[in-house]
Length: 184
Length: 149
Image 1 (cartoon, one colour):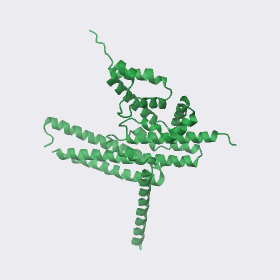
Image 2 (image 1 turned 120 degrees about the vertical axis):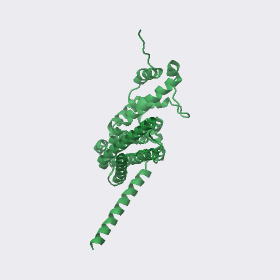
Image 3 (image 1 turned 135 degrees about the horizontal axis):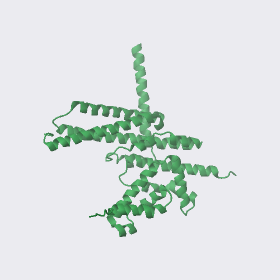
């Protein structure tokens, strides 16, 4: 009996998450003029979005201003627009970190002396960030960008940390290369 | 022996652009639109006759590009409330009928060409999205302030 209830609850949770995911995905597709024009450049975009803009995208200040205007239509438009920007940010962050990791894995493969702790640290942060991005994506679809501000700021800090660690690793690798100890 | 340090042509061109041309334009949005208008649509190159004559086409092009990017990031960082005020000021500063201008901006979205090349994709989206919202808010406010018959 307990087994059946747990299975039903798990199935319900899965359906709920699936619906949230579909909603977020639809919101991204329904952006005015589509998101293709900017998202096509996400793959080449070398840098993550500057922190001050991340804070602005997920802030509730603009929403409070729109609410003061007392227009349901403007509020709806605001949520549609801001959620679209937030979803694009999730895509960009995911793409940037994936690229950093790809570069890092390539560099690690060429290196003879891999530091296990450093590699584990980078991988853990990467996994955390990917999970956070998935959570934010679903959260935006369910509740809106302002409701996931905390986790978005945390994801931004993680992105910066991963970039920093990968940069340190690359610098160390180059230093060892110059000393003639490095890659085979 | 005293060595006089001469500013680089790019720095000189940039200072000249900021201190002479841009200070005359009211508001950051106005400056952004002006800088975007110095860019050739077909090639993406910036051109300003006066600057190019004085500092060379290379320095002039780079100075315009830097100033454009700076103005873009400044406007993109505005809160929605500040952007609405900025937009109102910009529309009032044009010699056209502000309501006509507002309608044209909503319909044609000319501000989309104010986005510089190679800026962060999310910030570019935030910029156009905020401007769409600011226009809708201005339109709403104008509709509300019109006397009821």
